[in-house]
Amino acid sequence: MDINKNISNPIRRRFSRFTNTDHFFAALSIFAVLLIAGCGGPSADSNQNLASAEIVCDEDNGGITLPDGFCASVVVDSLGPARHIAVAPNGDIYVKTRSEEGGVAALRDTTGDFKADIIERFSDMTPMRGGILWETGMAIHDGYIWASNTESVYRWPMPEDGSLVPEGEPEIVVTGFPEQQSHDSKSIAFDDNGYLYVNVGAPSNACQQEPRTPGSMGEDPCSQLERQAGIWRFHADSLGQTQQDDGMHYAIGIRNVVGLDWNHEDNALYVMQHGRDQLNTLWPDLYTEKDNAELPAEEMLRLTEGANAGWPYCYYDWQQEEKVLSPEYGGDGEEVGRCSEFLDPVVAFPGHWAPNVLLFYTGQHFPGHYQGGAFIAFHGSWNRAPLPQRGYRVSFVPFENGSPAGDYETFADGFAGVDPIPSPGVAEHRPMGLAIAPDGALYISDSVKGRIWRVVYTGESE
Image (cartoon, rainbow, N blue to C red; front, side, top):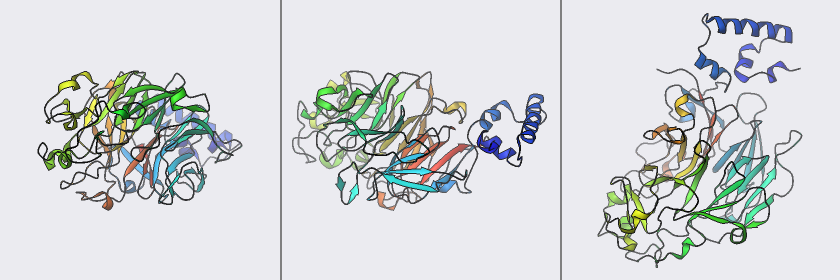
């Protein structure tokens, strides 16, 4: 028996010098006595840490900054543009990429240093755009590897017999979504009752009669709300479903969602809406360049069946803390009008930060402040000029009893490598995906070069 493979990683590290079971259990007994007696042993809080993630840190945290008590190491570098990410129960990592080699990269660490030394690629499920496979959605759920593209949601059974990559073609779970060019990624989430949730983004900025044309009024009613601009619900255990025949229009009036997750404590779906663009460009008499940079809010929405968040008729102004009428529908930046009827966000962020992942922390490794809270990966803005670009960070919202319980915080920063950020093209990295490992570590993926970080809690703070 290999003792080192049958004990928790931190204890394995501490006792790896013992080479037989008698020596090991003798040492473990002494260690336990010291803990009980309190003779210089770790505190109760650090006992919890010893039972979770092993502490492996790069000297510079892989180029990012973290709160006191946390550190990071680079799992893999230059994987290629990485999107969403998931970690299997055995620690294998699956990453959606935009690559000519295959839409999913599978990573495995065989040496115990949390560096990926085996990388395999699979899946050609996405139509090519510009010579690359266009992929986003990624999940591990109920014994399957789940993925999505612009057209479908599909899955493979988890590999068996130690294999890293699943065999054969995937099972098609849902298809039949409208063809569109804008906001076409089908991000996915699951609840505790056997349902799958799929974002179907709006194919426009603000449902104008003449898209992105100055002064063009909006369609009223907006025809895009029929099959797009919302969240659709399906059965997670049924194959061959289509949006029109089998989908339930769960929530509407949502411009585009790339990040969504089920809050198990609150028993509700939470999503991060990408706010609209070009207020000043399209309506220069009503909005300044500064307004254009800061508005509207990026919204965290708590959705229940039948919710309506008001797009395209309204947007949320985080400075006024009010949902106001869009200029395409007669608004002037202050009028509320029909917007009083629609769902307000539970948390609002400044404009154009581009929230591409929402992830509730369900691990046990991070301190209590983070338990049940929400991490958001902000991919970063492109349209705040002449102001510097913003976002390019991972933020955190504390939750208590399933609801937001404080202001949002910056958790991980420095991805761009420059400050201020004049344009997206100069950013060295942009955070895109988040995942929780079985040991409670947090993984972050980068969409520029494909770097992946593993973040752990050290138990040390200044």
